[in-house]
Image (cartoon, rainbow, N blue to C red; front, side, top):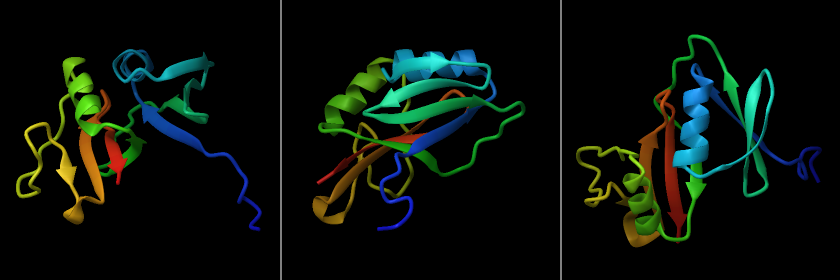
Amino acid sequence: MGILATARPVVFVCTSDRPKAVAFYRDTLGLRQTGEDEFAAVFDISGVVMRLSTVPGFKPGEHPILGLDVDDMRSAVTALRDKGVTFLIYEGFGQDELGIWTAPGGAAQVAWFKDPDGNMLSVNKAA
């Protein structure tokens, strides 16, 4: 067994405006906030720690940084849309009217959106 085989993951998400990001992750996405210190707001995502860290002048990348696996894509996307989340539509991807892309053969579904800092996130459902 590898040295880190039993390690528990910690997710780091950067923000330049922590109060705005905290409200989004806690109130819009519904993640459970478990703490906050001078360096980060801390959330629990099904037993995985996520640290929302303040980085002055932070600029997001163009790739997804966090995917959240759900049981029911349509319900999750609809609920998030009702809370004001805008899902990204990519021309030529063949996403449905909600922005859900289904992999060939139906093996997985993904819908992408951004947080207030422009970090790309996704909701996913593996078949």
